[in-house]
Amino acid sequence: MSMAKATKVWDPAERLTTPEAIADYLDAALEDGDPKVIAAVLGDIARAKGMADVARTAGLSRESLYRALSESGNPSLATVLAVTKALGISLAVRAGEQQPDAA
Image: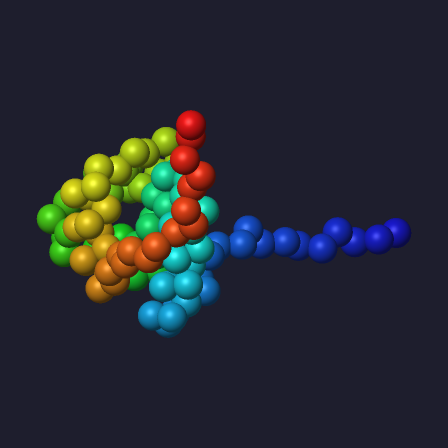
């Protein structure tokens, strides 16, 4: 008779312990380009840093921050910028690949 192994749900917030890990995680989400992924990643980072503290620093209620960064959330650019500032991270822009002209 085999015994089932106990499993634990993987939580990325548990791995976001250094500024470099946080930057790499957010950079990958921004590279993906899916707004839902970016919001979810910001939520993971906020949970790693402490959602209540991030919300307070960003000038938001904890509930509204959870809602904005949830799977069904759609945070405004102002919210994204407030959250990144509260997290002590910044967004950067780099040139992408040139798209061919549609003619």
